[in-house]
Image (cartoon, rainbow, N blue to C red; front, side, top):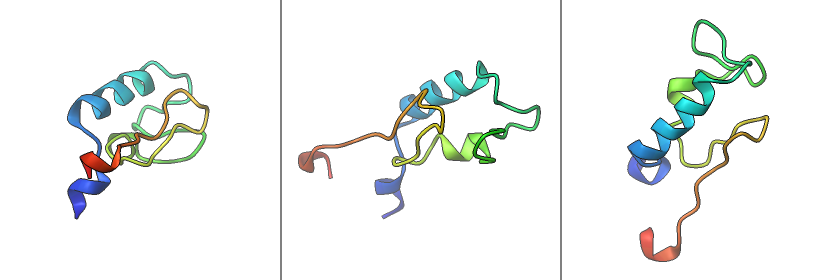
Length: 64
């Protein structure tokens, strides 16, 4: 069940790379806009950046 809530490691890395270059990332790895802990947030399938820099991941029914 948990696997269905998590995105791929590649997607999480891409998201974290975006966050690492964002002006809203704090020195303690949180987002100054949404207050989320970024290394956790980027792993969840249905998470999205509050500033629209990356969005949730969608799958087709075949992938579920």
